[in-house]
Image (cartoon, rainbow, N blue to C red; front, side, top):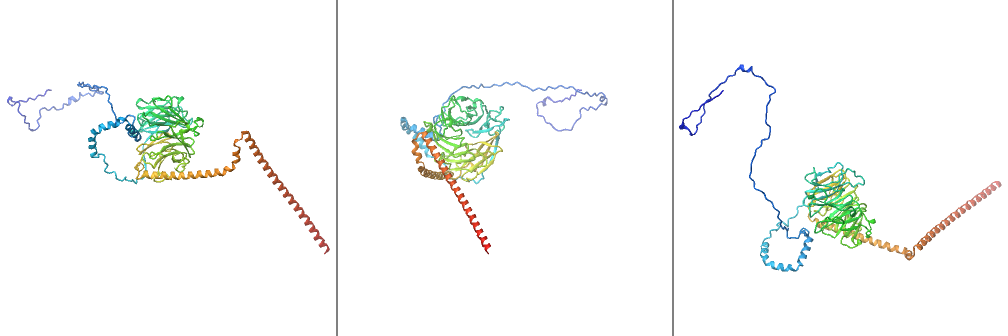
Length: 600
């Protein structure tokens, strides 16, 4: 049905504005229901329906400008220092300045530039833009209770768990943590055990950021402080390998087996060098080897840890701990399986000269060795059940030490921001924080990190983060309270006085012991005069003399025994005679008494 409604309008009204107004409703069409049509309704089930379910697409055209690229090179120099000079190293800067000042053209250049730069220098000196207005402001001493809280836990993602044997912080900020995983229990490793080690992002404990794939499990792993993409690792089979994280998970190069260590490499350290590619390693095979990662075909230098200073590998002591201080580039120290600390000089010519001093007081392996970052002459060692603080000037004994603990100690290190604070780990899963300005008999803070043994420990350079590795491969990241990572007032002066006092005390005791030994040697010298006379005798004569002395002593003992036996026999005979005489006298008395009675 078609409905049409016609609007009429005059032509003169075309184009005029419309004026609308309200009016009541009007009914134009009314269709009433027809009941007869309801009988014709048929319900259809099912009903076929068609739909189009596709993504609507449209075509657009755009006009873009072409982005052209090209390669360009620029010469960039930071701070005006040569590439091989690190401005942060004070000693390198001083040596470089002295070298430049000795140059003949240096004075002429300075004189020619002086007039030009004088005006600029005067402008710079007019106002000190770096003036510190609050230099005399006293350091606020916090009375906060020492504490620590767990931030993250990184677990070994493999089914067969391994020990987290070594930790290394990312040099450029505390964003990453490299962890070396290995099973150090002899012949306990399963064939299905993974060889991988990992680099973790400290914000993501669910998945490692980078996987390192060595040919043998890594016992140690260390970041290069000059190149944050390069890591050096020591393997369980004695090989040395290095990685560049920009080139993937596989090692860039490895040392050949025939020129490597023959035991697990427990420690690798980067050396302070111009190229930043030199390092050295230590192993329980008794050797310290120096390497250049640009050519790992063979070590550049070798030193055998023979305490007899003869370079004999058969007498060498296995090395577990290794220490190197960049401010003392020619010296390094090692800790051995026999509890000995050996101080060495790399630049010496002969093996005897390279081993400078030997310190021994631990009764077990030295697991950790580190110099105090504020006082390099004092160093910390951890072994057996104690942690000890030593001075280079005293070799007979340590100057300070902790009490013997019930659980074995496994690792330790100094705080990089407080000279009086150090950390130790134990086999019972405990992390101890020691503050010698607070108390010396017991740890300031003792944390039960986990239920299994802790094997590795590393503090971040800022001092507020500390990471520990456990026997099952769990790495726990903890944050220390501000009181443990903020230097207190006069702390350096107090620690200096404490170390000097204890060093002086040990020196006095050492000199006293030396005097007593000299006295004992003098008193025993008289008894050894006869031995001194026989020094020029041959071996056979010495044997004959010893036999004569032996038989002389035997004969003398026999004579003494015979004389004693004879004396005892004589005493028995005398006692028998006395008893017989006593019996005869008794019989005579009885007879006399009987006769007297008969007469009466």
